[in-house]
Length: 357
Image (tube, rainbow, N blue to C red):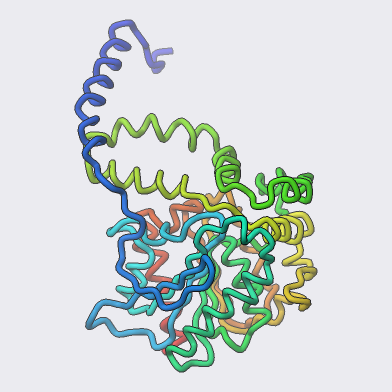
């Protein structure tokens, strides 16, 4: 009992007074923070199609460039500027500093006109045309491909179907086995009537999916972080970074209904990526057809894509050059944490350099 924290009326009153003081001191910073930008690194648009935009980022002058450009494919469910959230914590900026020529697929915001887009349209259509555009710009048969989360699953499918167009493949926090025992998100959707959901709603509201993700860790993601906000109010720089993250979290595009239906049924409910039952455009996705060098990066504390869900890729492809990087962090920290900037991005760039130059 001697080590127990004693809460007295006096200590409670003092803590409340301190909170009130910090709140009063920090509120002016909140009112003066101004606009919160989306993506901080300059880019140029090199291709547009429907809602999609393909952005190009060039390495700084004087930096030796990897001669093979890198195309990044993000998930459909969030916005890709997570990779370029702030100046000192930007995966894209660090890749550029390491000499990578980067292209980023921005899926945009689907609307009712896109409700019947299927996975074939995204993988064999949009992705393929973006990759062909980059190949033509650089006069190359094959380029490097990096897929993030669901975008990593798309990239695995694409590389299996188009092995002659991908020189090196990087997957980051990518689900491969969608039914590992510790996958809470998967457990929730196994019995979901996705046909009823899509047939009723058409496109799936981004807000619905966002609150589903937040509900996986309700205390940490919907309560605790706002208590910690009080500690940031007096520091304008940290406050703005917090608001950047909040903007990204709640900037959730709607999902094209048919593609959502297929992804839930084929990947989650049937575990088709490792069972070999996924078909895109009438062709079966066989991971054994992936023979290029492959780097698989996962987060050891990832609650959305548990480590075993990503590590399942080992031994399932036809590549004889397979590498794994385990990052001691979570699904988002692998892009925005200080440790990730020092460890993950340089390791990815070095891996690409050694297989591209």
